[in-house]
Image (cartoon, each protein chain N blue to C red):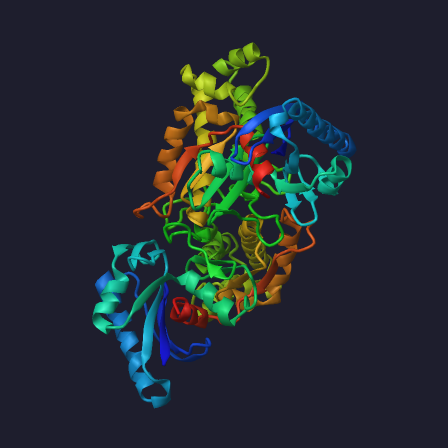
Amino acid sequence: MYYIGVDIGGTNISAGAVRKDGELLFKKSVKTGKERAYKEILADIIGIIRKVQSEAAKNPLHGGAVSIGLGCPGSCNKSTGAVEFSGNLNWHNVPLAADVQRETELPVFLENDASAAAYGEFIAGAAKGCNSAVVITLGTGVGSGIIINKKLFYGENYAGGEIGHTVISADGPPCTCGRKGCFEVFSSATGLIRMTKEVMARNPNSKMHRIASEMRKVSARTAFAAAKQGDKAGKSVVDEYIKYLACGITNVINTFQPDCLCIGGGVCNEGDYLLVPLRELIAREIYSRNSVKNTEILICRLGNDAGIIGAALVND
Amino acid sequence: MYYIGVDIGGTNISAGAVRKDGELLFKKSVKTGKERAYKEILADIIGIIRKVQSEAAKNPLHGGAVSIGLGCPGSCNKSTGAVEFSGNLNWHNVPLAADVQRETELPVFLENDASAAAYGEFIAGAAKGCNSAVVITLGTGVGSGIIINKKLFYGENYAGGEIGHTVISADGPPCTCGRKGCFEVFSSATGLIRMTKEVMARNPNSKMHRIASEMRKVSARTAFAAAKQGDKAGKSVVDEYIKYLACGITNVINTFQPDCLCIGGGVCNEGDYLLVPLRELIAREIYSRNSVKNTEILICRLGNDAGIIGAALVND
């Protein structure tokens, strides 16, 4: 007996078989190709679910699949199973759970991807044992999942928790959601790459140019790699990135004061180089700096698996 | 039998006798004089509580006081009864509940003032009957109280819900909390007056100058009054004020998606002149604009009484 979790990201669709205790048995992955039509992406989602079932069928100990949990970016209505709006995928009111259910004949549950990842970290990762946690995923966008009193928080219409789409710099650069200056615009990997490119253009002698040509692209690592080599322009990008990230996280803490705030996504591979100055800035800015108890800032432990595990188990 | 509620604001301290059903029997008020030392303000808080008791004693039907609830701006630790930090009052770790209890010999409960006001609106005002609500008070500062599943939400250290201290314009004007560009900096009455003065200085022919001299001061009403008389500069202040207010409220909705969001404070006396364009801007910006159910934007009904009623009853 196992649970299928599917994590639909802006870049990859990953799916896996998850045991009731949170262990991910194995996973499969395919490119999202988010510029494609919904029907094409849907076909790939169904395809990867079938691959998980075929793989699981090879080991009789796994038993049968209980249900399918889909983690998807955007406003996901748990009761109708429709994705009401997803800026990153450009989906408007698509009946995702119903479409998957028709093809798979299993119970299908829809969940916001960041909520699913948060639940995964809460069940089996960095937020395990907490009463409340906010998990912020710094990826193509900025996703967030909120756990209050050990339960996912959704708001009254399942569209809550879109912390990535709270403005931290009014009149800032445009966001996919239609607003300007959202947290996501600055703190997503996409935002980091944009800032990196802007500073590279103004600094032709920066080491970022050599690093980018070695990596064959400007990535979320370019500025960090240059900064670690003493590059001033690279350092200025990193400082700016951490400044906005601290700003957004401080907003979250001033609002929720959770037991812990976990950040995930590729940029967290920078470890202490990111975490130490981030914690310092936040400690200086939070409204509760005189409080005895304050929110712990942690790095997520499950990586991309969190979304699969959380999506698989959140309706169990 | 009645409950004493005290609302400690940046401008006034108000206290009243409240019935179990939420009815405010009568109230008393005194200036806060927030520039004074804690001990002096404390003496006035105790003084006004005694006045409420003396007044209640005149009518034997009122019976005795059950308890005292204190609503105070800032981080209020409900379990210790200490105000851990209040930017507006410049208090740091003051044992307010214990100090009042020693003098009054009644059970004393401490509550954040905006949480108390939110609870008052939830019990007897605009948010009555909701499952979740966010109440934002636009006063000297911007207070907020959050109700989730019919209960006040505090975070893990009672310091949560400081939505006024979430940054909406990074590197904006300084806030009393030490950050820059907080929601409070733009959307408080203080912020409106600052913006009004700035625009007046640049527009010597604006009708705002005549209105201010008639009112003998620049107030939160100056720009609205001028705008209603067709004054362009006044209108630009009003538009700017509503723009930032919509920005902060949209952030709250994208995060919490409550049944209703209620705004209170003197500026709400502008009624539809404020509410109509505010609702339009929010409806255009919210992430959930495609959702069937969206947050209702309402104006608080109880005015300054909400804080007294909520503080009195929240621990009942």
